Length: 631
Image 1 (cartoon, rainbow, N blue to C red):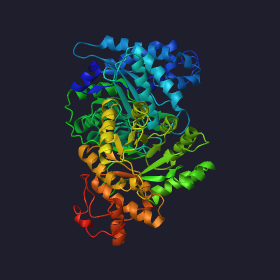
Image 2 (cartoon, rainbow, N blue to C red):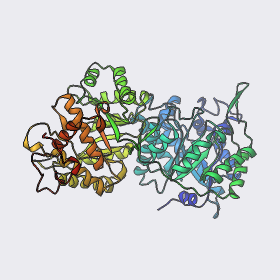
Image 3 (cartoon, helix red, strand yellow):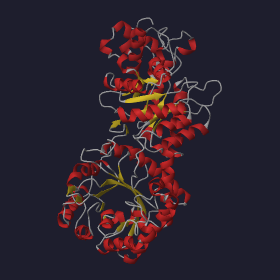
Image 4 (tube, rainbow, N blue to C red):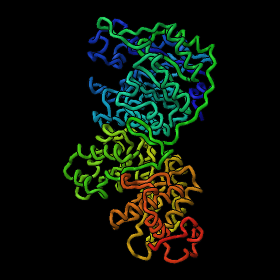
C-alpha cells in the first residue's frame, strides 16, 4: 500500500523547504554555548537549542512548503564520530525527526498534509576513494535511518550524493533499517539526490547517465539533483532525466551559483528569479519535487510554492535507458549496435599468464596498464576480473584490484570468482553497475540463491552457467539441457530474487571440440542450437560465453580461426556477448575460405553427410556450407 507521501506525489508537485545549513548560520549562535563546542555540526544544536531547528521548520512551513527535511544531514555515526557524538546517533536522529514531525503536524490540514523527509547527506568520507569501508558506512547509515524511522518520518532522502558507491551503500542501509522496523520502501519511500559539479559530473567523475543506469534497479521513488549550482546549471541533467528516468524527478538547487565575496559565500539568485527558473523545470520537464538548497530562504520557498500551485506539470514521454552496466563514469549498453558486448578476458589469473605473474608480484600498476590496454587497443567494453589463485588471499586481492581499476579505467567490471567472499569484496569497491560471473546449480539452490542476493544488493547483472546437480553430467552438453537449466535459472532469479530479466546473462557453456574425444565432437553444434533456443524463448535475456575454451589445445593460428568462426555462428544464433581476447578475433572476410569451411565442419561435426537423429541442422540443411572441407 502506498504511503501518504507517495499518494500526494502522484497528485501534485511537492515543494520541499529551503536551506537548513545557511538558515542556521544566519543566526547569532555561539559555538561553545549553542553547539556544545562542536563547530560545523548542525546536529549538535539538537542538544541545547532544539528551538532553533523547530523555528526553521515553522518558517518554511508557513511559507508554503509541503515537506521539511530533518536536521540529520550529518547524523551518521562515522560523521558524528568527528565530534565524539557517535554514540548518540540514534538519539539525535530520532529527536530531529520528532521536532520536524511536530512542526509538520501543526501546519497540516485535511486538504494540505505536510510531510517530514529524513535527510542523510554524503558524510565526509568517500567509499570509492577508499576513505571508509562499506561495512562501517552501512552500519553508520543504518543507525541514523533507524532513528529517523522511529521519529516518524514520511520518507528518507539520500542527498548531495557525490559517489555512486556511497549511494548504493546508503540505500542498502535504509533498506536494512526499514526491514528491522517491519517497514518497506512502499510505505516509507527512499529518495536519492545527486550533486553534479560544474565539471559536468559527480565529485568522483560519474555522469548523470551512469548514475541513472546504476540506480535504476533499486527501489527508490525519485532521483534528482541538489546543491553545488543554481537552477540554470542543472538544466541539461534534469532534461536527460525527464526523458530517461521513469520515476519522479527532484530539483533542489542553490540560490544560484555560489560566489566568495570578501570571505563570505553569497548566493546571487533572489526569490523571484529562483522561483521562475524552478517553475520552468515543472512546465518543461515534468519535475515532481522542487525545493531549495544552500542560500534559499522562506521567501524563495513562498514564491516557489505560489508558482507551483498555478502551474500544470508537463506530461513526460519517457524512453528508459537501454539495459546497461556502468563503469564509475559512464554506462555501457548490453546490446551493442555494431558488435557483440566484448568482455576482455586478460585480467584473469586462470587464463592469463601475464595477469597471474602481475598478481604474484603485486604489481598493481601493471594490472591497471593491462586493463587499459584491453580497452584501448582491443576494444573491450567490459573487463572480466578473476583473481582466484591458490595460496593467496583472493578476497583481499579482488578488493585491491577492483579499487584501482574503478578509478583508473573507464570500463564496467565483471567480477568473476567461484567464491562468495571474493565476489562481494569486489562489489564493495565498485561504484558502477557490475556483472557477477557466475551462478549455477552445481551445489543446488543454496549457493545460487546467495549469489542472486549479491546481485540484488549491489545492483549487478548476473551470469548464470547451465550447470546443475546431476552427478553424471553437471555441465549441460545438449541443447535440450542447456535450455532446461537456463529456464530454471531465469525463473528462480526473477520470481524468487526479483532480478530483472535483462540483467540475466545465460552462459550455455563453451566446451572444447579440439580434444579428439568422441564425446566432445558435438559440443559446439549443441552450443549453437542451445543458444538459438534460449534466445528465441527469452529474447530479453543476455547470452554470453567464454569463447576461447572451444579451441583449447590447438595451435594459436588454428585457435584464431576456430574462435572467430564459432563466434559468428553464435552471434547469428542470438549470442549477445562473449569473454574474449578481442585482438585475436578476425572478421570472416579475412579468413581463408578453406580454413573457414574446415572450422565450420568441425563446429558442426561433419564426419559424413549428415548429423542425424537430433533435430539439429544437417549438412544438407545449411546450403552455404555445402562444399565443406574435411575437418
